[in-house]
Length: 247
Length: 247
DNA sequence: TCCATTTATTTGTCCGTACAAATATAGGAC
DNA sequence: GTCCTATATTTGTACGGACAAATAAATGGA
Image (cartoon, rainbow over all chains, first blue to last red):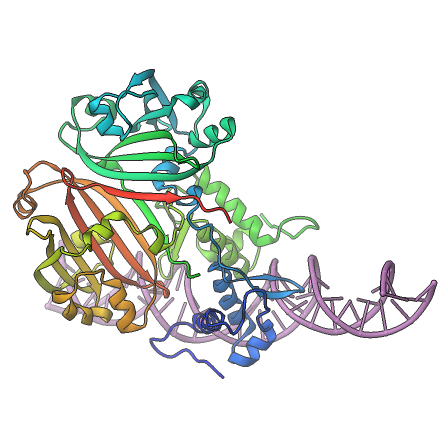
């Protein structure tokens, strides 16, 4: 069967890739089996080896197959790592922890969760948590966002490491306490900037800001940490790309 | 400067990619700037255009740059990693399409994307898209959010089905046109409510709102649909739970 | 000065060739 | 039957060329 690039049709390499993907998904090539070799595919589709290799590269990118020189191209099992916490961490996290930004700690206290804090954090009233307040600053000292961490007292020892730590906190909790963070609940809302925030973030009172709250939950369904970030809307968007992965 | 493949060294294309990546990360090419053209890189590194393109492909895979024919290769802001569309589709989507809510269409037009719309939607200026404006109403008629859909003209026929359709649009595109939505890019920002929005949503002018923009991209890298939802902050939070799945 | 058209630029797609490198297979000796 | 070596197979890397397609820049006329 020969394929040609028709006006308006997809490029040849996408057509070849699509045909192979459809065959994989309907079981012509079960997991573990080999696809035809590049030379066989070239003959079957009547295209160049370059085009075949581009098609196979798309299948590899989609996690459907894996190629090795001398061995061939094998169909791989569906990947289930798509929801790994590290993978779906938002741009705000990446930006926040980019090299050169610095978390400027303003206060570290043990606080009792009152009614207002319970509403703001989702934590139960009456409990005591370690509260770390500060601003994340860019390399030039400009404020990026205001951040408050609430850390479960069971893991409060990580507080000591914060002054010289620039990355996320939850891996510290995992390392020091052998805990595994299994879920991160994220909530985003819009808020208006009041006088205190305005001063600390160099924006006008009354302007809009994004408030991002994340609750980190262990394998034992225990909340280890809550973070609240407030970003001026004029300087920040929360972006995310979701890709479809078919099992 | 010329590079050669030395025994034990990385392939040329990886060396070129690494050199460019290092320059990007240390600020030689800031976000938004253009990399040298393929021809310039070929001359600089003394390698073939194939090798240069392989190097740039690695940079694209890493999310560092984006290339377009006729334009060149631009350095991109850091971007998030993937998750399954169906897995992590947000609660807001589920709520929006919950049984009982109704999308009240106010206008359906074909619009040309001007400069302001290009900025708001991310679509290319001059193109024509089907624009569907309206509000999503709760069971008791209370407005939940203001929604605008931009639908690629190639799929505009789905517009006819909207008046009696309450779910998401992209499955309609998939069903009617045999297309597969592979990626959804989501961006969330905060905005202030102006007079027009305030009237339609029963909130005060000057209050805060969340603006959620989603871009639905097919397997052929074509944008099928863009939706923009504006939610009053006092009544809406964007929530999401990410789970760790170990293979 | 603005706009439409033309031209130039740049990347995308497709073809081909050649050799390297990793792996699988075949064959012979013990 | 096992082990070692040689050969074959298959993908990876690198080169070159050509034309298409999208975008940007230049040009000319109103």
